[in-house]
Length: 204
Image (cartoon, one colour):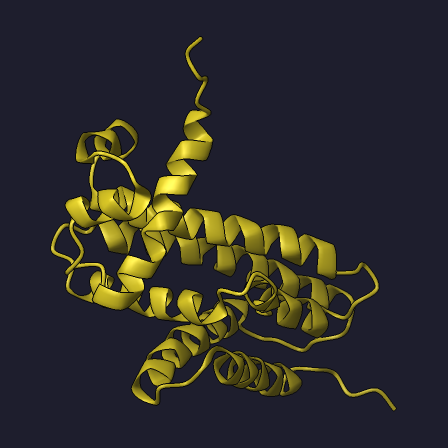
């Protein structure tokens, strides 16, 4: 009897098997042949699940992002302040729990590097959609903070984009300074917390 293969599970398995390769060699320097070898499948099998290498890259980040959404939903509480919710949103400690925190940081840096030299626009298009999700959450949270009287913000769009730029800039600094995951995470939260403190209404 033929074995039934869950195509989505197989697709995820192939994508995740490429993480170590991408971290070691970089995305641009990694070939489909090497990805197939890491996944333990024939090269032709890769093309049954992905049109190109870019789809594998995006599938990896989709998986990581979904794990983060689940972790965030489990950690966030209704009685938290808006500042606390945003800090929880940028807490990626689930990567530590899964034991792949350094790989995730390295991988994301490779994603950014690939986007900077991308001539197809595929990376830019993907990550702009990705950061749009961040934008929608942060902007919504800031509006909630204003409505609750927790924050005093005169330009939600500017503050939202500033928070996102902190994340993008921190990733570049982490690469340049050879930061480990824990330091990068701590630095990110410290900067976002400091920024939000400037807009927090002081209570007597």
